[in-house]
Amino acid sequence: MTYARLTDFTAEQQQLARMAKALAHPARVAIIQLLASKTTCISGDIAAELPLSRTTVSQHLQELKALDLIRGEIDGLTVCYCLNTPLWQQVQQQFAGFFAQATTPASCSPADACNC
Amino acid sequence: MTYARLTDFTAEQQQLARMAKALAHPARVAIIQLLASKTTCISGDIAAELPLSRTTVSQHLQELKALDLIRGEIDGLTVCYCLNTPLWQQVQQQFAGFFAQATTPASCSPADACNC
DNA sequence: GTTGTATGACGTAAACATACGACATTAATC
DNA sequence: GATTAATGTCGTATGTTTACGTCATACAAC
Image (cartoon, rainbow over all chains, first blue to last red; front, side, top):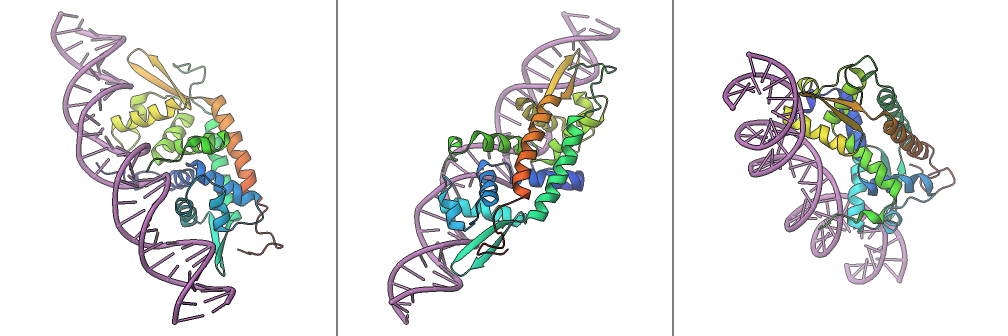
């Protein structure tokens, strides 16, 4: 079977899912944390700190770059990756809004039938 | 090739990735939003509101239930699903901590070589 | 120009996710 | 007990992700 047509979901739901997917692998979480904490952000250095081959790390980097969550700047022979901080702030807001819904649900209040 | 051994990443990174994965599909985002907004949360009603077959929705529900993000209470012939609000608050905190890192990076400051 | 090095692109195998029809299960109803 | 209705499970087809070796490219140094 084919996948669900994405048009059947709202743009907000798709966007949140897309960003969540970017964080859905520990390697990518680790990459973001590295970029946030290190003062150097050279591709090779990132790969060296992860238990994955350089090829695989490069793939994860491309995936994050495709979403514009990170930016790569070529500096001679090396490439320096950095977080796209403004976009991260946007994503932060999106997740905050979603979590606000999820943590204060209207469902299953005492008046309802179910009480799980 | 086999996947990276998860033990090569920290428990925090794994946990965040696991929860992000739960939100990495628009259908699951939609389900959470439905459970948060509706006062009824019967399995059949949820499926009826999504552009997916009842079987597929049931699968997504099981996935969320396996992570304990939602709870199901059997009420006769129907099953009522609800958000596990305390867990959602925990997850909210985890993401908040992560985003705090990602939005205030130490990298690529003016003193650094790269300026992307 | 040749060599060496950092990087991304390509190919591909294995694992996983998605989607749904058909069947099994369970409970209410007749 | 037979029927109907709401759910979940199983099987399975298809698409996607993950991982890595190998190759191509591009720059620097000689």
